[in-house]
Image (cartoon, rainbow, N blue to C red; front, side):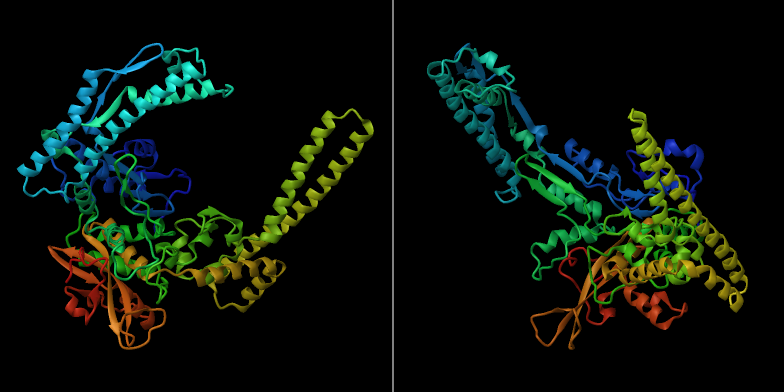
Length: 638
């Protein structure tokens, strides 16, 4: 079973671009650690880097953007979970490379300003030339028209706004200058005004003039416009170019499910409240920038590291440590066999097709309780503890096999809220109180008060001693329980040993009941969705060398009532949804019905199940199932 050194406290994120620092820091001591070895191998070869690039080779800005996309941190792997997330959730690209600065447009005298005509004419000429060359561009490129050159028109319009803004502000500033000197008797020159700092100054009418003049005059001394001459128009960054690069990046990867949901939900005939990710490609009108964001909204969506590494080790052993795998079906079968050994009770809510509240981790069971973590916040929380110390990665898979049984057989490690935790808190409070009393003594000259404070300290010390005596019973409980539990492993049917254990546990019944109830409730809510199950296997394939895999959604109509399923326009039918895993092997695409496989396995209660029966090469094999409208354009199996 996989074992990891608990002393490693760092969290590292593997990245093509930034990996050198964390790996340099840990390689001396942990170079052979499984986590480090895997992350290094992923950096060298993975399903993203295996792709051909599509950016225009003649556009350096576009190429830089594409390289930035491919070299960002897309694997988050720590000693808790592994996740295809992006360290830098936001990437921005715009047309500032076409921006040209026109400087010194104004001649500033002591009390007046005037436009420097040759500079102003240069500004007008650049703007007018862009309009004329745009018309030539349309003529020279028959495939271009008003509809598919919106990005160029936006820049032309921005140029017009710059010129109009300049013309408007110059007049406004002149009016304020006149008001400042003639009406409000201003005494400063315009150059002095431009250097003013207005903090902590009383706001007179003259000062209001000065603020206005400085702000607006500064903004029109120099302006930026877009150089849209004919030879530059092919360098304009467009929505279509960004979309092509982004789609190529996510295509046939676990990220495709997020991207295509975002892309087609806006125009979907059936709207959904489900939103697994924020809009991945948006346009900021204020900066004229395209924003690419990778921000999944599904919580608990990582694969527990302990589970991943067990599966990973088995796959690598089966395939002689090769990174990229060609026999995808064999990889899938290997993953399934290890997965079902570790988590035979992986829990998928039959009616929960998709959810942002219950991700991949939720299906494994109450892992958050084993770690003492509030799953809603991701933070340590005593109200979510069942063990005195978080389980290690080595212990977690054993816990997931049967959480209730694991707790029973590790009762010596239980979290004792009343008998231990609260006592420790009380001791700490009294020690803090003693520190405060000692401080009062050092600051007091009143002998009577000092004596009273010393008496109070002695009372606190006696109380602490009594509390520490209570803790000795806790230590005895843990040692005695551990000893009996060890004997029970050898003689599990011994009634004498069970009776001994019951007597040892008796003084701690309340705490044990609290933890048992907490675990029971945790198990009940530890369910995930159809999407997360499919997403789990798509990620496991992708991270284990099957570089073309994604999740798609399908639907079927049944002539019967199905609780919680979505109604169609036909009142006699209900639309039934399902998520599948798609993967490619030697140019052929397949659908894997992982939910049906898991369901059949758990109902049959047998490890003898043929995985290949749940793999299909065409929709016709699925008896009337169709691809959902969100994924119809990226599905490979038809």
